[in-house]
Image (cartoon, rainbow, N blue to C red):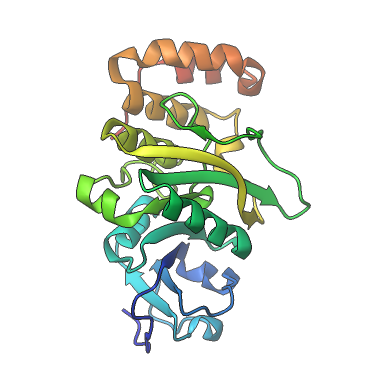
Length: 264
């Protein structure tokens, strides 16, 4: 753990960044707010000093020996002091006013423990289609959720012991779908999850969830559906394939996707 003065006593929000050491310099922190703590989980070579702009009184940078973004995010769930945890990456900027709007929604809807929203690109466009109205999430309408457009009420997730499946997500063979699995695990525990048409973040890169056409993404996507739906996975995969047929591009990708695969 890096030696830093850390003075946030009882924050309302925790912003939890997951990053590799070589990408620490890409993180652009929001302005200091006494209601907000910032946790940064760093994986990789951490023998050198962290960038100077991250050495702040509201920010705690932790060196993680583990590999994989899901492990980093589980670390955030365990160590967040805030009531509400927002998940960030090194290539996003927060839409700060909207973050507080989400907190207000949590405060006025005590039964809701997970909220998802939207991510906007730097040019103001969206990489995927979002509903225009809020809705309750279920096993079938939450598959497109990205981590940087999700917030949780921390206490309930610890209580129900709902964490990210560390066999999925960036840094693992199954490099996508960890968010979807996280939400569906929460739903199966009876946790109320909702979508709101609110922009959480501005994302500088491309989400892995919108990438199709390779054997690797087909295998990973197949493993996600197998993890979520188990014995019924083939039928869900088939329905998904029919809806997204043109994205798969070639027969080999389709064949790989439809196989009942569950890499763990």
